[in-house]
Length: 104
Length: 207
Image 1 (tube, each protein chain N blue to C red):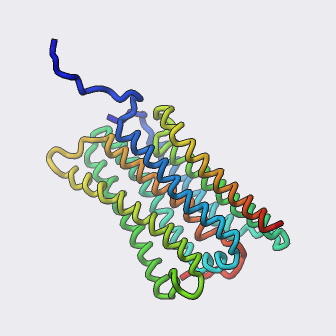
Image 2 (image 1 turned 45 degrees about the horizontal axis):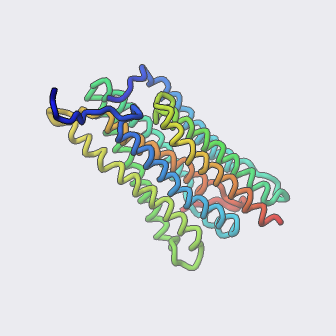
Image 3 (image 1 turned 180 degrees about the vertical axis):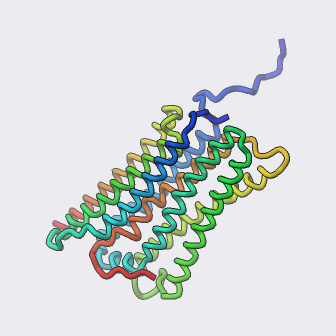
């Protein structure tokens, strides 16, 4: 049997509303944040970073509550943290380093 | 004393084997998608114009609808596990049915999107935007395959739940739920990467 985590429905609903709000925020940020053209590539890096940060917050909410990482065995958290951390580092690092190459 | 071997052992980690293997599989899946994202970022930064023009040709409102569908189906998946653990078979059927319906909805929207792209000649191998649309079809295509792969066992469980015995395996549903949430997680990254992070603020008009 799965573990009984009590009445988790309020937590599920909170996560659901948070995900919807953050999705709208992602669209608003992408469509309305216009950095000055003179900023060039750094403006784009900032633009992408905002999108990635919002996505990471959404992912944490889903993993902790919907996927029960909050309640599960700590070993599972370790198993997930390593590739998840590498994924985020890769996204940021490639974005920054590659962009840096094109600035210089 | 019985000489028979006792095979009814508990997992050493106290985590059901299926669940542990699913998490390990998801970790490897994350690395699989990391390859796509890594290549996407590198080539996007080297081809701002191509990716900007290609991205502006996508329909972000359709992708937004799909995002809400997937978020909703993640919620219904979590709800169906909750109810199965409490043996509320009717609610389990309802929420699992809604999750499958969400999967279908996602694929229908994707089909509309793909049809429009093919109608306008926006696919790899054409004269313009080949690079961007190679990524678009590869990333969203693999994601859609994952959606279909999740819907097959889900449908089996759903149909099985209508039999006399029902579907009395909450851990199996929870394990499948992990996979379904992962599909949602990948879309959380694919949506802004392909549809929203346009490298220049050109005219927005999707097909």
